[in-house]
Structure formats: structure tokens, C-alpha cells
Amino acid sequence: MKILVIHTFYKLQGGEDNVVANEIELLRAGGAEVELLSFSNEDKTLLKLLQIGFNYQSYTTTLAKLKSFKPDVVHIHNLHFSGSAAVVYAIKKANIPLVMTLHNYRLLCPSGSLFHNNRLFLHSVYGGFPWKAIKKGVYQESTLITFWVALSAFVHDHLQTWSALDQVILLGEHSKTLFSNSKLGYLSSRMVVKPNFCYPVHEQQQGQQQPSEHFLYVGRLTEEKGVKVLLEAFAGTLLPLKIVGSGPLQELVIEYAGQNPNISYLGQQSKEEISQLLAHTDALIFPSLWYETFGMVVIEAFAMGVPVIATDLGNMKSMVTHLHNGLTFRPGQKEDLRNKVMAYWDLGTKEKAVFRENAKFSYLKYYTPEANLLKLTRIYHDAISKHSYHL
Image (cartoon, rainbow, N blue to C red):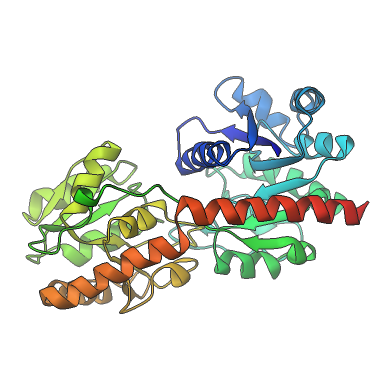
């Protein structure tokens, strides 16, 4: 099978970029012929933003690639913003089956995250022109830019641009339910859940049974990631916490680490260094306040037999099962998080071993490369079948 993967890279490398690279590697290892057509937001940013509704250069570039490569199916990951919906029109013109993974909520709201001012923002989900989002400046805190992004999305909603999608991949059940009940509900019959995957680790890297040295947070240091809740939950306790990452709340993390000897801030770390930290971790903490579409660090922990203590919110509900492969707590509730962490810390060796076994089993059942390749290949075949039916 010949597959063309299309992805727009952000200025700063993120999780989506890693997912794209992993899937291309996986597909090639499985015998597929894969090429990547990439766009970038790196230069001429203002010009590309002005063309967010339809970037003609992206349109012609895509048509040329389709003509030269002649793929059996196209898989889009990200079009924002230099790719633009023009890519979809090029694929539609070439009459090729189309799959798209929704890594965020950009098709529903200019925010892209359904989160603003430290709380969920769901006003744009169900349709209509998103005046409230514009007034609040949910995209880059700018009413003008939010208006421009919203106008583009509104036009494509009315043109039903996204009806060209033959299969739509969501990364979790909550995302599928949310999109199915949204203004894109007309695509619900084409929506399918396929989580991301990660590669297994060496046996010697897997989580230690005892003694464990610390709890661990890995991620961006931002409001929506629940970093403030995390800091307040561990402050004034003897529970050892190590924090890895960078972001707007970095100074706050440094301040808490200076006042609380149990909290250590390690800054950015390499993938290998994070693996070593996970290998000696009692549990990973995942305190997000927004509807995470997926948490790569969660399945990386599971792959090493490390349980996760996460908010009972969004797709985390289907990834972390309370009292099975981890514990869950109420979003934004520092006392509940602290109580769950203390309860897990106090468990005996045998009880923790069961959690670790369940975490590893979760990885082996849902998040391995082999399981992902089967699902992805099935989705491509279904897209080809549905495309023929739609003709």
C-alpha cells in the first residue's frame, strides 16, 4: 500500500510531530510505501496566517505530490496553519481516499484546546459563529487573530469541507463522543478510535518493584496541565516529587522547589534520562485540567510497568482505571490528589506489584506497535472502501 502522510510542523517540536514520525516508521516496517509531505509555520508566519482559509501554494504543492507519488490513501495529521484546508481540496480533486487524525480540537474551537483562562471553554463546540471565543481572544489572547481563525473555520463548516474525510481518527472514546455530539456530528459514522503507541523498553529499564524513590511529572509547565494543583498537593509534605519540563510556570515551579525540599525541578531532560527517572518512580502524576486528546507519557509509563495517578477527565478515563493500573482524582482538587498519592505511597510491596503488572498489561493490550499497525491498516482499508461507496 502507498500512503502519503501530510503534516504541518509547529515552530516548536511537539508530541504530534513525534507521533507522525513513529507512525511513518511503523508503516514502513510493516511493508508499506510511505512518503511525507510536510508544511512548516517557521517562516513568513503572517503571510501564512492570512492564508489560513486557503493557502494556494499548499494546494498546488499537494496536487503535485499526489500526481507524482499516486498514493492509495492520504493521511493528514495537522493542517494548522500553513497547510490549510486547501490540502483537503487538492486531495478531493485528485479523488483519493482521505484519513485524518484529530490531535486537538481546532476544528471545533479557535482555542484548539477547549481551555481558556484556567477552565474548560466549550462554547464553540456545537456550532454558530463563535463570538464568545473571539471576545475572549482564546487564540493567542488576541481578538483579531481569533476572529480570523474563527472566520476560516466557520466558512469551511458551512462548505462542509470536512465531508471529504473518509475516516476520522480520534485518540480516545471521550474525544469520539465529544466530536460526535458537536457540529461535526455528521461525520460520526466515519469516526474511529485508535490510540497512539510507543515502542517497548528493555526489561532492565522497567519500573523497579522496590524501593521506589519518587513520584514523577513530565510535561509542559502550563495552567492546563494542572501544574499549580500538582505543586499545591505536594507542598508541605514528605512525598518526593521530581518535575521534568519547561513552560510559562517554570519560575513558579522553581519557587516551590526552593521552599519544599521534597520537590525537585530537573528542567528539560532527554528521552533516555526520562526513562531512567521512570524506572525508579513509584507512579507518574498526570494532573491535567483540559480534555487531553492523549497522553504519550502515560503509555510510556505503562510500557515500563509504572502506574499513573491522573485526573478523571476526558480520555484519561479510558486510559487510567482507578485501583487497576493507577488511581484517579477529581480535576483541580489538590486535597484529593494529595490523598491519592499518600494512599499509594503507603501501599505494601505486593499491592504495588499488582498495580505495576496491570500497568504493563494495559500497554501490551492497547498501546504496542503491533496492535497499532493492525488498527491503522484496517482504517486505511476502510477508508478506501468508504471512498468507493461515496463515489
